[in-house]
Length: 127
Image 1 (cartoon, helix red, strand yellow):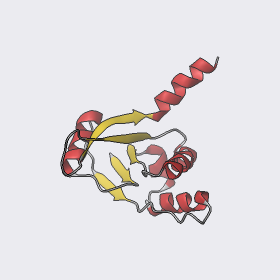
Image 2 (tube, one colour):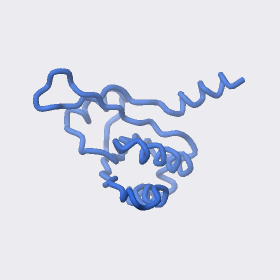
Image 3 (cartoon, one colour):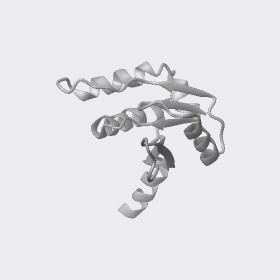
Image 4 (cartoon, one colour):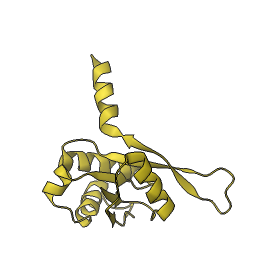
């Protein structure tokens, strides 16, 4: 599986948690800087972020890819739209949560969000 990380670097423990949750080995991690210029339009900046991942169109459409989205909510929603356009479906995304009572603060993998399944389920409720 390819993990495309648009957020803070993940620890070895978090990578291991992802492998357990998905039942797949993370074979490649692509780190993509996701800081944006707030005075510039967001769409082109997110497109450039995705381009920096360096994946081919064939990889976007066929490789097992897991996304760790940026923490900035506006960047994350534009990223999901950009990826859906390239992939043809909604990607699975990592959700982290703080570990209760940890000092210094630490984060663990809470779940892997199956956005395509969420979309398909919502589509059935549309009627």
